[in-house]
Every structure is written in structure tokens, then in C-alpha cells.
Length: 427
Ligand SMILES: [Zn+2]
Image 1 (cartoon, rainbow, N blue to C red):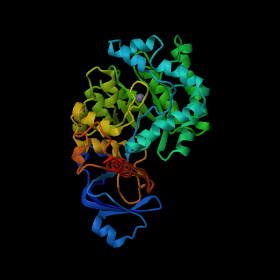
Image 2 (image 1 turned 45 degrees about the horizontal axis):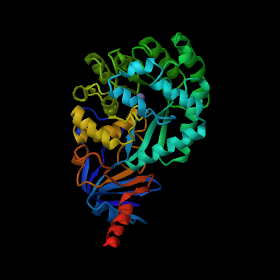
Image 3 (image 1 turned 120 degrees about the horizontal axis):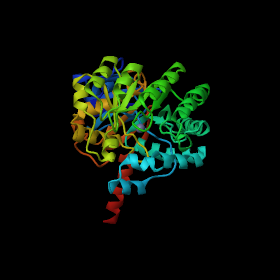
Image 4 (image 1 turned 120 degrees about the vertical axis):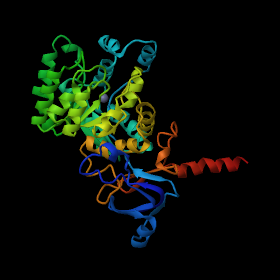
């Protein structure tokens, strides 16, 4: 397959070995009138359209017609699998009830835990499939997915089994993360240490024995898991082969950024309240800052992570949806819009953050995140003349086509032709 005639072919090249930091985040490696060639699902050449068509004869030639072509988006932080919904809680939060109050009254995560425990694997897979369909329609071709609504060994394994099944059934690639320490379940509310023991002595060994996760994550927060408990869980995970990640400094400054740097985490996520020292420590250790502006938006606290400071300090910044029942968004284009408007990232920086840097946050930079030879042919064609429209034009789906592993999986142009034809028939 050839993809040619891109107004801009945004390669995001040059960040495969190391994530892009500082000024590099604004350098997208754009080829005007660009194209690429694909063989067996992989990119074999990238360059000017005329050079690509001269050298390669594609069985299928897709013209981008002057539109913007980018790597498929990578979403490095999602709670993909769960049962139920929490729209009534949204109403409570709008009337001013803080999330931590809802949580201590058995709502929030705990409500979703109750519903997820009741659901079987099939139900979780059905729900997850709908979510992945939506994500793919908005241009996301690789996602991370966490457990964390089971909170018993059996139910955490069930969630990760559902993630495994989804990865087999759906064309979106999924990277699994064990998040047994997402909340303290009600049966351990007076014995947090007992739950930490269950996570480290029973859950992690079982998850590893079954090979169901690559990462281990902890919700490190006041009233959830403290620094010491977080460190213990992540160290046990690391010793068992699970790479560390951490939900850090989301609602208060607990020192999560410093902990992430100290333990050698691949990423620290949220970071609304991180200290300058913590950010500096992350830069020194190359920990990816996965920022989740939709989560901050849905918390309605008016506070966002200090992306500008992080970029200035040369912390590699990635962006994710944090898709979950209290932040129900599948669309990385919306995240780019929020990153620009609320955190003053430029469209170019935000594009780097949802492609190559997001791939680094989930250890997939060798496979995806840029349009370079050898990588998977995961490509999105957006119906805009250049990349500066991302974040600027928001609230509609800009996707024209999505190519996954060298195959067109979404083609909105042809479906548009259907209803435009209907219009003519009306006349
Ligand atoms: Zn999260």
C-alpha cells in the first residue's frame, strides 16, 4: 500500500531511541507533499510523494488529497475495562460535592468496583469493544489499559483476562497494566496494610504467573496509598518483571514525582501538584510525565499540570485521555485541544505527546509513535490542511481515514459520500 499526496506528512521522527524533550517536542519532521510505502503491515519508505511513487508500485494507492497525515495516536493511560456508569455522580460533583467525599461515602471508584465485580468477562469485553471502536474512529491505534476495579485477586485477573481478549479481538493494540492498588476495597477499609500484603503476596505473583500485565501502577494519594505503601507495591512488581508507573500528585502534593524518579518508573501520571524538585528529579531520570488534562477538566478544580515548566526542564511529556467512568472521553483530539487551551502546549508539542512520547510511556517506541521505516503502518489521515489545526479546530472528529497495520480500518470519507449522495437524491 502507498499513502501519497499528504499536504503535510507529520513523521514525528527522531524520537525512537529517547523520548523528545524541550525544544525537540516542537520538531515534527514534516514532509510537504509526503508519502509512505507499506509492506506486510510495516512502513518500508517515507519521503516525497513523487519519490515514493517512482520507486514503489502499490497494489493499493491511497491519496491523502492534500490532507494532514500523522502516526496513529497512542493513548498511554486508560481505564478501558469496567462495568456501569456514574452520570448521577456527575450531577453531585456539579453541585459542589468533592470527589474525595463521594469516594469515602462508597461512590466513585468503589461504585464501579461493585458493578465490575458483578460483571463476567464477556460483559467487560463487550463494553471494552465499544470503547475501542470509538477510540479507533478518533484515530487512536494503540492504548494502555489498566485493571483496578476488581480489587480481589479473582476480579483483577478477570479484568486483565478481558484486556487480553480485547487485544486478540480488536485491531487496536493494547498494553496491559496491573492496578490492583487503585483503591482500598471496603472489606480492607480498616486494614490498608492487609490489602497491600494481598496485592504484593498474592495478586502480583498470580498476574505474573499468567503473564497478564507489563506494568504495575498505584494510585498514590492522601487517603488512598501513601508513599511507603506505593514504593513497596512498585518494588515487588518491579522485582517480578512489572515496570513501574504511578498515579502521582493528582489531588495533593504527596511527593509522587520524587517517588517515581527514585524507583525508576517509566511514567508518572497526572502531576497537578508536583514540586519543582520532583519535576527536576523526573527529568534527571528520564521519567515520562503523562499528563491527563481531561481528568483535571472533569475534576473542575481549575488546576492543570504545569506542562510548560516540565517542557522547560526537559521532562518528556506525553498526553492521555484517562478514559474512566468519571472522565468518559475516548478522543485524543479533544486532549490535544485541552492541552493547548489549558496547559499552553503548542499543537506540535501536543502531537509529539500523543505519538512518540506516549509510545515511550508504554514501552512501544520501537513499534509505533512515528512514521519511520520499520515501524507498524499505523497512520491517520486528518481532514485539515496542516497540523496547526489540531487543538485549534476542536469538537468535531477530524479523522478522514485510519490505517492500522497497513490496512484501512476507518474510512469516513466514503461514508460521507453516502449521505452527500442522499442529499442530491432529495433534490
Ligand atoms: Zn488513571
